[in-house]
Length: 484
Ligand code: SAM
Image (cartoon, protein in one colour):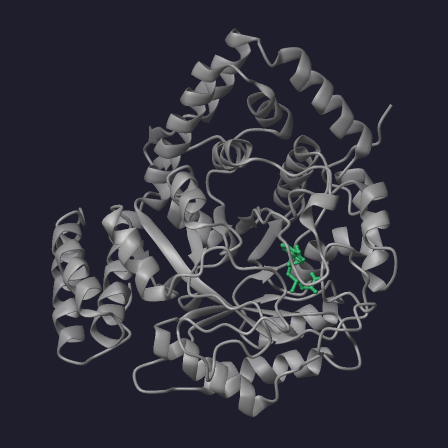
C-alpha cells in the first residue's frame, strides 16, 4: 500500500514513489488501449460552457497513458488536441523574457551544473548594484520588459538581502522608454519568511526547478550542500505559497532521470498545489541538460530526442491546460519551431547565461567564462521577434496581469472565462507596438505593423477593439504603458 496523498505537505507523500511506479505500470499496460486513449483525449477536449471555454485537464495517470502510447496516429491526435488547447487559451501570443544572472557563487555540488563549488577554474562573479544597473540598461535597450533573475545558492555571497537589493535596482532603472515591469525569480529553495520578503519586493513568478522527482537520484545528483535535502527542495513551493507568492513555476531538468518518471512527478506536483492551495503552477519549464564548462551532457543516461521532447510538451499542454509553458535558449531554432505550437507560451530571446553577459558586449560577442550552459539559440531578440511574427505568432512583452493583481486563481479565472481575446490579445499588440517603436530594426518593424493591423481586427468586443486601436495610435505618438 502506498501512502500517496496529494493533500499531504510531506514531499514523499505528494510525490509518491510507489504511486509513480504504479502509474508507469498502468501506462504500459494501457499504451495500446485505443478505446481508453480516445476516452482520455475526449475528456481533455476544450468545451464551451456558459462561463466560456473550459478544459478538464488530466490526472497524472491519464496523461501518463498518453505519453506512453506509441501509436503514430494517436500521437498525431495528441498534437492536434494540444494545438487546439493552446489556441483556445493562449491564442498565437508568445511572451518574451530574458534571464539575468546575478551571481555564480554556489555552495552546492549539483553534478550537472558548472557552478558547483568544486569547480575551481571558473571565475566566481557577483554583480555590484552598478553592474546590475548596466545589465538592466542593456536589456532595456534590447526591448525586454520581463526578466528572470538567476543566482547560485550561497548564504554568504548571495544572501536574500542581496537578491532583494538587486530587485529594487532592477525596478528602479528607467532608461529612455525602457522599464523592467516584471521580475521573476529563480533562486534556491528558502524559508517562508524569505518568500514573504520576495513577495513584498514585487516579484512575479517564483521559479524553482525540481531537477528530478526521483528521490534517490536527486540525492545522488546533489551530493552536498543545502540542495541535497530532497524534502526541503520539493516542499519549497508550499512555503512560497504560504509566504504569499501565488504564481509559482515548476520544471524538471530532462536528461537526469527517466522522462516518464519525471512527467508523472511533475503532474503530481501540479495536482498537489491545486489540492492544497486551490491553484496550480503558473508555469512549467522544460529544460534539457546542456553542455557547460566542466559538464558533459552525455554522461547522463536519460537524454531525450526532439520527438520525445515534443510529445512531453504536447502531453503537458493537454494535462494542465491553464499553465503557461516556458522554453529557453537551451533549445535551438528548429526545436523551438517544432514545439511552439504544441503548447509553449513563453520563450527567452537574446539570452546570456553568464554573470554580466549583456553590458559592454556587441550583439555577436558573448563571454563564456561564467556561462551556466551553452546557449543554442544565439539569435538577437530582434531576430527572434521577427522570426516569431513570420511564423504567425505575436511576440508579447505584456506584464499586465501581474501588475493588475491578476495572479494565482484570478489569472486562472480570466483564462477560463475566455476573456483572454479581449484582454491579453490587445495587451500583446500594444506591447509589441512599443517594441516596434523603440527597439525594432526596420524589417522587423514593417512585418510587425502589418501583423498588428491584422490582429486588431480579431478583438471580438467592439469597445475593446476601438480602445486598443486608440492606444496603439497613442503609442505611435510617444505615449507608453497602456494596458487592459
Ligand atoms: N541555484 C538555483 C537553484 O538551485 O535552483 C537557481 C537555479 S539555476 C541558476 C537554474 C537552473 O539551471 C537549474 O535549476 C538547473 O535546472 C539548470 N541547469 C543547471 N545546469 C544546467 C546545464 N548544464 N544544462 C541545462 N540546464 C542547467
